[in-house]
Every structure is written in structure tokens, then in C-alpha cells.
Length: 127
Image (cartoon, rainbow, N blue to C red):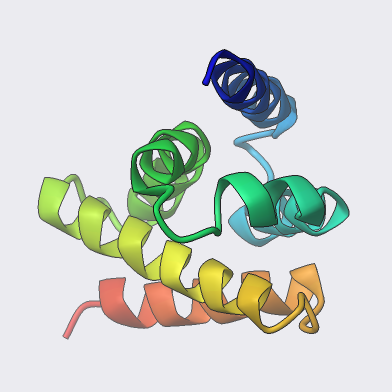
């Protein structure tokens, strides 16, 4: 188990370092595209450690590192500060990314970013 903990810690540290390279002033779609390209480029690690069944605790910790940077950027566009909405968006984004991984990363990262932003903006748009 110590080896697994070391690998998980390394992946979490990589995620933190990667997120720090994102520019919050940049369009959200661009940041998401970078995240999805990173996931696709490291798909073997992600398939084993994040997208595998039974990895829920680690998956949540990993996603928290990435989404804590990106979801507030999206919510700020619409002046929302709602914990339930944050959870809903995070879970929805993960479900899309999870299905993308399970389908073999066929959709391009840019297209996936556009899909997530489109759905999220529809949800956040005023009635």
C-alpha cells in the first residue's frame, strides 16, 4: 500500500502544479482544454488511479484539486456562490470526463471543453 500512496501523492502534487500553470484570466474553455489534454496525455495513469472502479476517495481528492480552480471561474461569470451548485457542476463535469475516458478519449479536448461550458452555461443562465 505504501507504493500506491506514493503514486497517489505524486499524482496529486502533479495536479496541483499543473493547476498553478493555468491562467485564471484566460477563457475557461482554454483552461479546460489544457486540463483535458493533460488527462489524455497521461491516460494510463488516469485509467489506473482515477477512472478505475473503487477509487472514489482518491478520485474526489484529485478532482477537488483541479475543480477548485476551474468551477469558481465559471461561477464568477454568473455571480453565483452556491455550494450545492458547485457540487452539482463538479459532479456533472466529472461524469462527462469519466465517460470520455471510458470511450477511449475519442473526443478532442477542445470539443469536450466546449460541451462542458455549453451545458454549464445553460444551467447557470438566468431563467
